[in-house]
Length: 470
Image 1 (tube, rainbow, N blue to C red):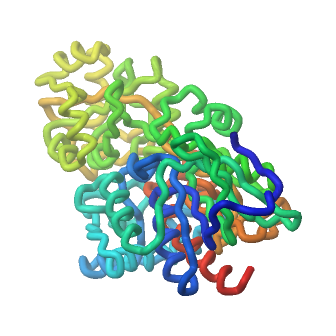
Image 2 (cartoon, rainbow, N blue to C red; image 1 turned 135 degrees about the vertical axis):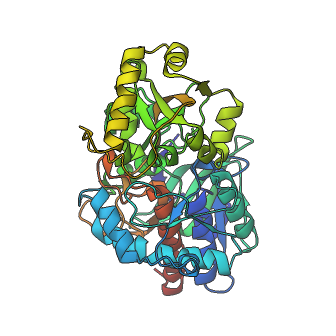
């Protein structure tokens, strides 16, 4: 049950700040709130799963940030304004600019803060550029996985003196006559309903990708797509928001991915595509510019016959892929198909040899600049594919939604008139993102960017609201 009910007049437990969701967003919000709130303020983080993981653990774990100390140490010149420009360019100007400006300024400080204050051992991914980014700015844990990022954030949060209650699923928001959220109703893992009072509530419970009805309503082209996110992302924030008169924004925006190994379910890094691999369909034909971005490729792959494509690469790129744990998992599961010749590859993939030869010849011609790619890709900057060939059968998938509650640059949830609702904040997947209303607006890393940056903003704002008695 997802409901909004009148204030019950009393609660079994109270906490000054309650945060719903213990992914990257909620954990960062809790750490920031701990710093910003007055001494003795209580913070409680509620998590549906017994062991917090969520979308963060399923992600690549790469966070884009510009102007960080790590970039400076490597001699990389970058700035929040440059990241801001890249985000707006990818979204073709449709992203909400005040929010873009707020998170791009915040993320630089957030990465340095997580590193210097909380001990997260960030590295900078500098072996390749993700599509749409002007320079190397992806920050990650040394393991290069979302699970490692989640574990590091959880460990840091556990040192910050606030409880993280796993196995507590928030179902009800309690609201008084003035529109303030006075508490939440939480279903425990023993099926008991606990009523927890609060002064400020932060919604960090991600999006609605695991709710087929909401996906069908807002993203119909992905209604039948494989969902690669966390099943707990049921859209509670959106449902609560609608019930209390909050404004929704960019609900048709989402992050897809065009190269999920199928049926193995492992993510194949888009780094392969950026360094020379191509996507072909069952007719052995390319069907898009692979350098435009992996998000918009999801629907394009699904539109192919059988909803299937093949990542075509070679021995050189196999070495690159093996630097990513998800790729290693896919290879160990037998996802990588090897062939010494085009004839052998066509036979193994059950695709027409003539079509495959035409595609390989076309790539060669584009590489030497004797032909121009009709999709607009530049093949001259990387080595051409050579035998022996490799291929992975892939499909498109929905990763997470980018629309949600409309918020201002202080993470305050807005009503239908753009006025902040009292004592309610939202961040991460619960709030609108910075990708605009279309899948093509998703710039690599936008999800974790807003989870961490807006989560920190929300935590600080909650502390200030307590101080001010708001």
